[in-house]
Image (cartoon, rainbow, N blue to C red):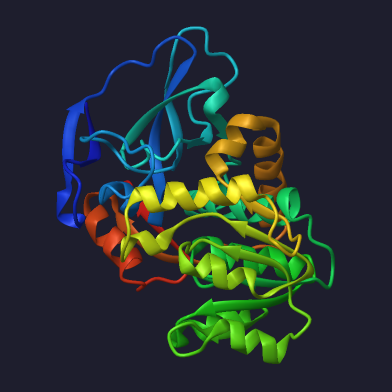
Length: 336
């Protein structure tokens, strides 16, 4: 039997993504082999592919944060799981784009069999990110005003859904074509291409934002800080502006400056969030938050927006959809 993995053969555009076949191996001791059903696509995958990510993996590598599938083989001494269990594996940014993956017991999260694997993929990266930023970092309270940049994306739509549950007053930047989705999810949309979000918020919410969630970076960080209320908190969780201009050093320098600063000149707290870093520090939080979100999904309180389900072999097309802003919500790779 063969495994198919999508490889970044060299840094560059989506054309550098190539499928590679290799023999399947037996899982090692305390390890399982998972036959993948779905894997999530993220903008960070594209940054790594283009060589614009701090601490870059060396080529060739397999991108992807997560894989959800069925255990099809157990390693020696693996008693905690059984063949046929549906599980999720969360990687540190590389490994997910594959038909089969391997994982140790402490890297696995059980996913109830009735839950759609694509929804589970959305939960694992996007919703855990959104939940932890809202409740672990910002510690939001009912009625607070928040600004979500990239509100129509995977994390953006997760923030909107969870923000509705928390009864927050929400604003979200998105292109005009995606405003209907932002509105349906309970936020006031702002057209980032044709409107100045700082001016719009000064008019619509002169008291300022209690929390700003910014994955864009660069000058956008500085302008986001201008919208904060007296008790406002700023959370940076990415640097997507680097896809259009800039180098990884710019990202590293900005994050280093912000992490050292910790508060603005006005005394507003500044946080930098990384799901992989927080998971490493607090695995207990990660597991608790996944279970909380799976419960919300089971109860019908959240409904992850899956924009496209693309076959694994067409990973380049999936990344193009995300890079060209042609998707709303989550893009998922499906393994047949």
